[in-house]
Length: 426
Image (cartoon, rainbow, N blue to C red; front, side, top):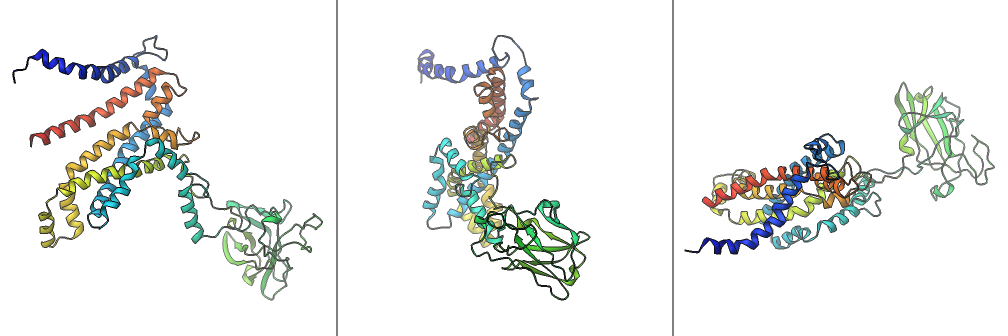
C-alpha cells in the first residue's frame, strides 16, 4: 500500500526484539553452552552429547520419551475420537463433553498431586487400589491366618511357594495332627472353638489343625491342651509324587478327614492358607510407573482431543453418512470408511499437538513418580532439570539434552507448518 520499508521495520522491531530475547538468544546460547564442560570454562566439543547417549540413566529417559511419544498421543486421540462420536448419539452430550474436558482446566501440578493419591499403595487411601482390592476380594477370599507357621522342630517343613509339607507319610487310624504357631490370639476369629482330637475313622486319614499355644505359655508342644483354639477352614492336601491326590478343609473344631487313598502320602498345607491380605497393585513400582503416569496424562488430554475432533465431526457432510447407510453399510463400516478418513486432517492436528506436548512432559513425572522409582519413569525434560539444577550441577549435559529435545521437536513442527501451508493453498 506504499508503506515505506523503514516504517514497517519500526513496527516490527518490538516483536523482533522480544523474539530474539526470548527465543533466538536462549536457543543460540544453549547450543553454545552444550559444547563446554560443567563449569563452562573448558571447551569439550561433543563430549556432552556422547555422555547423553552412553549414560544409563539418560538412555532410560530417551527410551521413556519414545514410549510417551508413541503411546500417549495415540491413546488420547483414540479416546477423543470415541468420545466425540458417542456424544453425537446422546441427549446430554454437552454435559458429557463438559465432564470429559474439565481436567484440562486443572494444572499439571494439581493433576500430579491428584494421581499421586489415586495411585497410593494403601487401599484405604489410594482410589485405584481400593477398586482393585474390592474386585479381588469379591472373587477371592483372603487367608484367615496370615503368617502362621509350624514349630521349627515340627514334622511340617517349609516347601516351595510358601507351603508346608510333612516329612512322614499319613496313615489310616493314626491321627495326623498339624499344629501351627505364629498367630496372635487377638487375630483369631471371634468364633474360634476349642481344638479337639480327631477321632479315628475306618478307611480315612484324620487329624486336627490348631494353634499350638495356650495363653500363659503353659501348654505342651504337639499336644492339644485345654484353651488351645482350632483353626477352621485350613486346606489340607495329600501329595504323592508331586501330585495332589486328595484334599480337605478343617472344620470348626479343627478336625479334617481325607479318604483312604491319602494313606502313604505326605500332607501339605498350601501357601493359600497363610497368604497375607491383598493390598492391590504397585502402580508406582518400577514396572508400572510409566504406564500409570501416561494414564494420568490421557485423563487430562483426552478431553482436548474430543473437543477438536467433535468440531471436525460437525463439519462432516451428513448426506454422505446417510447415503452409506442407505446403501447397506453398517455403523462400523460408516465409521471406518467414511467418518475416520474425513476426520484425518483433524486427527493429524491432534496427534501432532500431543506429540509436541509429550516431548516436553515434566510436571507429571516429577510429581507422581516416587523417589525410589523416579529413575525408572525418567524423561528427557526431567533429566534436563536434574542434570542442570536438581543436583547434577552440569549445565553442559543439561544444555546438550535441551538441544536434543529441540532437534526432536523440529521435524514435528516442520511437518505441521507444511501441512498448514498446504491447507492454506486449498
